[in-house]
Length: 550
Image 1 (cartoon, one colour):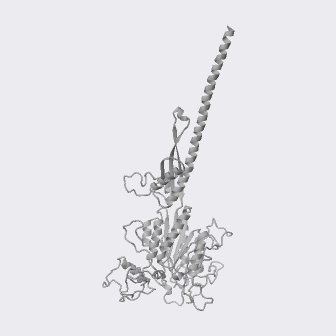
Image 2 (tube, rainbow, N blue to C red):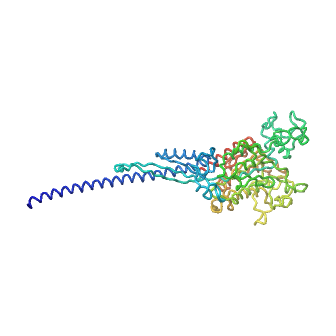
Image 3 (cartoon, helix red, strand yellow):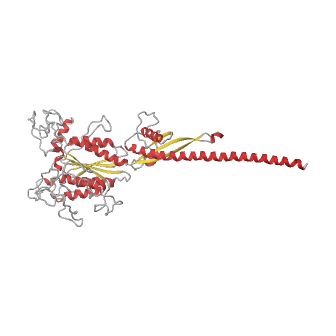
């Protein structure tokens, strides 16, 4: 019996081994399948995350251009598909403040498809708290992942998802506009028939078919301002009306028409309330028209600039900026010297612009200053009391032109007392250059005297300057006693200096050093007439938004 049983045991053992080998093979195949499918899963997770990260960055750049959330979502979908994916549920979410066109539309506005309250100030929509709006974009996407081996056990696929938040740089822009009386009449010398009466550059009245109107003085900006009021229908148009001043007519004198048209294009490129825009005007003294804190409302800025059809197409044209009276300072009436008689206080205009970034700080924004002027600086205050002649900086207090500044741009004096060491020759041009340093030199965290010619830290803002008209390069304000004669382009050299500081935070690197007078270079733009301002502002806007994107 023993001999018969032994072969049967051997056959059974061989059968058991085959079963074990089959089970081991199945387990090994399952392990290999799980490893392969896990690799597929993790590879797709990594691919989706990287693609969503890239899509969120691209969406943030498009957010900079004012695209709607629906457009951002479509762009993100296309971007993911270009990365070789076929995602579902792609959506770009922002702090969506838009008012829905259709109140029943679940997509637009707070609580809609594209709204993410966590991206709003205070984490709520409407926003809460005092924090400014920021350009955050969250891109979300889902991707089905199909397995290779798991379908054997009925597990065909799984859906994975990823999201990423990117931020586009917001823009804090301060527009600084010279409103001195000469600005009105520079714009009258553009060889254009601005009022359509058939006569070119007839700013002074008494031209052509209208000899009954006496000339308008070049130093009567009030009359020039009133011309605009009459054209807007804000003054009676009938000369027989006793309220109608008999010296008014629709002559080409219309202060700031070209400036308004140019700034309108700039305003339309802003994205409120995520961007902020301040307006500072200056003549004898500076005036904060709109602060950065209040400059998130397009309609408020429209009114201050005097433009329409940017925010709401039906609103009437407001008055907006006006040229300042000449000479504009009480001490200039009957005094024996020119203290207080200048009306181009570039130093105060730039200082107010730089202070905007300190008073209403938003470190994540790109800080930009655009300065528009038509001449050299000739006024700066040492004290707030404008009625006191001693309040005005004028080292050579005589009626020797150029008033209150030296005739050469190469002379740079140190600040006057009580700031040590002090210099009795410190003038209005020096003050304006110091103000440009304050705006454009690197901030305290970035300042390194070994890397810049700046003497001290500033605000670190980017400065663009625009010189308007012939006074920038051909000023005749020069006493014959000077030898050598005065530099006729003192105004342009000041604006080029500010542009050099604001280009890279270093006044020693001047892109205009080899460029002749009356030419644009670096961050400085020259426009001989008002009609060229639109292209200048368009060029600056293009450079601003390119800088932000990169």
